[in-house]
Image 1 (cartoon, rainbow, N blue to C red):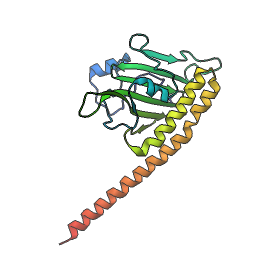
Image 2 (cartoon, rainbow, N blue to C red):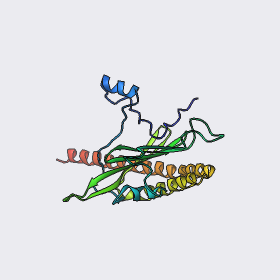
Image 3 (cartoon, helix red, strand yellow):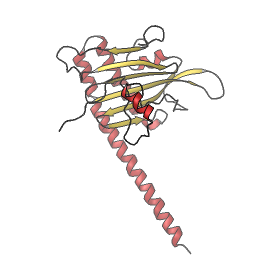
Image 4 (cartoon, rainbow, N blue to C red):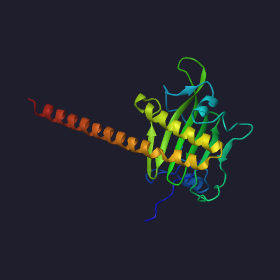
Amino acid sequence: MLIAMQRRPLEPIPFDEDDILTPFDRLAILFGKKSKENSDVLCVQPLIYSENYNRLFEMIGFIETPVHPKVRKKNLYPEVAPEDEHPTGFLQYGAEIRRKNHVIFEIGDYSRLVRFDFKENYREGDDQLFYQLDELQIWDGGTRFDLNCEDVNYQPYISLSSRIISNCVQFMSKGLYSDAKESFASLDDLIRNLNDLSDRFENQRAEEWLQAQTQAQQNTNTP
């Protein structure tokens, strides 16, 4: 059985079969100009924020922001597969300025991909600008985990993801590619924990639904 490879960093996010698309949407997708990507701010009270993008990129291993609107809006590294690496499945990271208020970072290989969405925001009640981790997504084959970046229950997973990616980026900056690959592979344990967390949430929702149904039935039977 053939297993589809993970999309590459900075490639468009594919649409689902159930998404409603216009003919113009389909044409834009065909030419790689349309993606299922959210540029709106999701988190009102983000767990991680800073006075600039630099601090956010430091969190994932960079000395400074690897992209700049006037210098380099898109950065892929390595641009081609290192020696002895698969030409399409090698570990690679990418950063890109999508809009003035939206910068993304993605890192992935043939089976996994991690995406950080950094966005500008304003504090409620004033015009003070700040920058936040608005979305963190992990793709594991066909499964995608969305880590809620304003829910404290996800903070340990966000912190661990950031440390793993920081190690990868620092290894890659030193030319230690094998170490970077090994660090990236340690996502497996995190993904297993996220699967367990997802199962717990699903069981909790099922129990709450059952309790609600039972209560509704009791109310119906009560004279």
